[in-house]
Length: 531
Ligand SMILES: Nc1ncnc2c1ncn2[C@@H]1O[C@H](COP(=O)(O)OP(=O)(O)OP(=O)(O)O)[C@@H](O)[C@H]1O
Image (cartoon, rainbow, N blue to C red; front, side, top):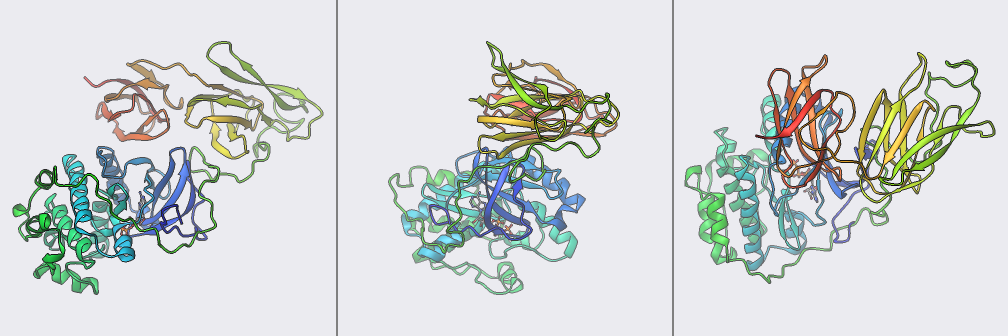
């Protein structure tokens, strides 16, 4: 249970411990697309939706999911949950949104009963604002329902926008049946007609009926029965329970003809000035606890990729096939590299790991551990694979915080690569081989636009932009496409696009933050300001 009483269930056997850089704390719920976990990482607490394995295996689903995730980045505004991170290429893709410590509308109404008139206005206006943000980007939510509205002390926040269309299609094509929660979908969605933004307006009306009365306007029962009611019957609503200022709008929002419903702009304008500024409405704090004893602020153990994090970190082990003794390549070396010497540059704070040899240590051969250093802002790590001989399995560098928790893990790094590290604090690292030269730069130089980035050289340097940039891939190697992720300096994912060979430059939108970088990509590319 969180501070405000949101139910968080214990993770179950088989649940992941870590998703990307987010450590799983518990389960928030499960739906058609997958399980939603509460997790903690570099952006604080997030809600991570992990896609079901069956869907993850569907190539068509992955393509649509990726497109929708891209679209979600365009949605801004105060009434929608911001997408902060994702991993689309993982075995099971996931996406992380900001976490609101609040019950969803169904939980709220179940616990405290229907909303009073003032709170209904707050809900109506907040949802109108959310729909405006979603519709102005060209998206349709398609699955606005009580479990997708979080009831926070500052009003509603809408989750899951855009993503519903992905499962809709898969569910319909793979099984031939409607999958979802009927009763909130519009008649045109159910009859398979074209779905437009008007479908969300219908759901807006249905949600307000529910919030005012505690009853779904098309009743409950088996999905077939509820679907049939939506298709042919009128909603059952006690108008007296709906706030007077909302009654007519709710009625017109739920008419059968989508073209006759108001738009999000109409709704939004209708509420400007109507919402009382000092409205006090209750947010339930009395949900049942399942996780009462689980601390929610434990140290984050996260990895850069989807590699599992280690609970406790022994000195880095030598690579399975790497040089480890007198017979290793490079001659009869039986010396162990252990001592990291910090070379702190007078200006710029360059920290270099220099390995020296020491016969007395019992650490595994060829591994090394650095001394501690402090980074007060996001920093950059450079890993240079100088391992000699034919058994080079690449460098593995594990960055740990002061408690020994893994902050980031870089595995199988060949040649020279640099990465951004968003976390700040006290760190040290271990490397698997003394042929791996590691440098940390806690005030890395920024680059200006335009610049060139070579393939497989890690993350780009940080550069300044608050708007759109053009990325022109110039070498795809053997591949036909290249995934490009734009991140803020704090590691937040801002935009994502797949560039295809022969298609020319792609655009990415920072949409606000001014210090950004492009995460490791497999292609070489040129970055410039969009002309
Ligand atoms: N960003 C978030 N902040 C707080 N709670 C969240 C967040 N995202 C999801 N939840 C909680 O997790 C629950 C489950 O989410 P999910 O989207 O899987 O459920 P659903 O809407 O019931 O299912 P479906 O995927 O079929 O639409 C939500 O109802 C909400 O209570």
